[in-house]
Image (tube, rainbow, N blue to C red; front, side, top):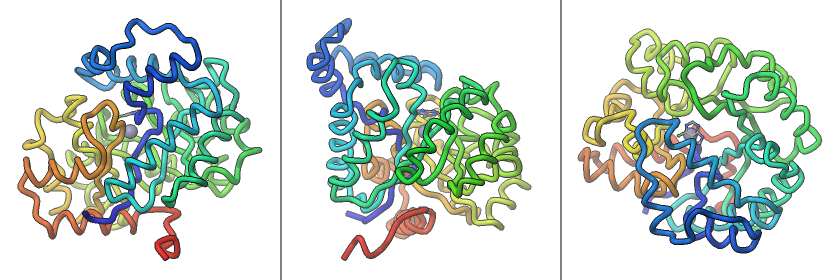
Length: 312
Ligand code: ES4
Ligand code: ZN
């Protein structure tokens, strides 16, 4: 299996139905069903929002530091089995703070799991764009005492209607703190969202970015500046951003000379971890070893914190 880095992965999106049930029992939280197959049967989505509704609901079972430790430990084990040598992992503190889970439990559990996980890994704190820029700034300030535990900030959740420009100030503060910057853009939103992420948020990678392909000038900019794109093929199919894998624009992105990477996004919900995405690209799109090798190489080049010494 190809060694690879995973750069677009929401830790809360690795919450498998089995762990939902286990944590619900441990924390005495009522679930509508304790049948994992019945939980999984709900994972049929029509767009990003229909997924986010289930994603935020299932998070109710994450309450303690130990829960976050177990969640991230399970992901790192699966990632290693899929050839992941380095992971830059998103987490959504606002989704936990709003449920009364302290930031200390989130950072404590996640950073301990990364330390023990046996895979090079780092955290990227994401702002929930549909909660607006003031709350984003509050959460960043609340996280600054933990500054050494995360390497960057991102922007996720419902995209359309929440353009990157709303978040200029909080990204400026993050930049001044020496934090790396990424944003979801061009998943459901148009190329204008990608332009804003680059020009206003000064992002160093674009998460998804598939709709950038609608704008040739934007493609030229991404190519010239070698801005990596963290593409998530199975996610795009499950959220109906593309009709099927066979219609995915990823091969054309590579042909354009873009720095494309392949990632799993929310693997517990989208039917596969990162190697499963690579396998599907070969099977459904006929992508060659050469193309997939290039993507894997891109993933290390596009990473912020991978240290080859870790391999040693
Ligand atoms: C997400 Cl696929 C996706 N898009 C935007 N925000 C997200 N949060 C978790 N998964
Ligand atoms: Zn994502």
